[in-house]
Length: 235
Image (tube, rainbow, N blue to C red; front, side):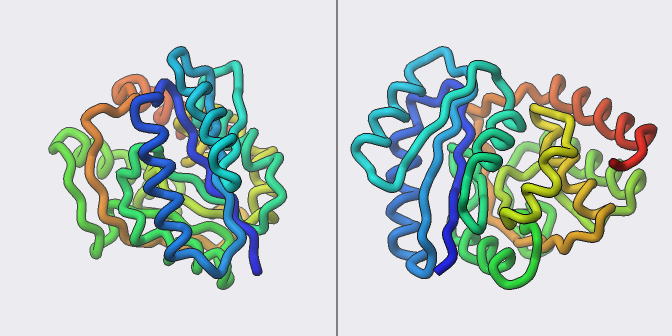
């Protein structure tokens, strides 16, 4: 039986964390019986009561653990959680569960069945997406830039719904420089350049109006990251 560690990066999410973990744990109990799964809450420098909620959940629920980082950054949280995990398969999803959990078994079956990385894609033809026109235009524009710059077979680099084998993670994570939102893109571009097998899975995705993402700042960070990858040789 393969082991699976699902990481939930969080920053100031005390109001939704307990409910999301309860929903996720109930789903995994029913639908992921073929895996030895655990959930890791990765708190990156929250300023509210998120860390206290994570501690309480870990005491109440045997399959839930947590780590705490003193610095903010989704990439930093994933790097820390995935690097220390001993699970065969690693995954992460956003705490708001914007990507429908019904796609999660397909995501995991993909990496259990031969792919190195599986990603949820909001731009997959079979995906069912509800989001603002602004987010739609930005997402499509960003992925056009990625395909033009790297010719990578990836339609949605930034969807917070991914899985990776431990071997692939251990190989790629030391090469990724970004510690924040561009972490996903950099990981995927490196994986594509090195010939790792990547599977895209359609998702049902609903935009969270309470998102912690600063869209203008994130887009600037992403474009700077793309430029860095273009001018810096692949390690």
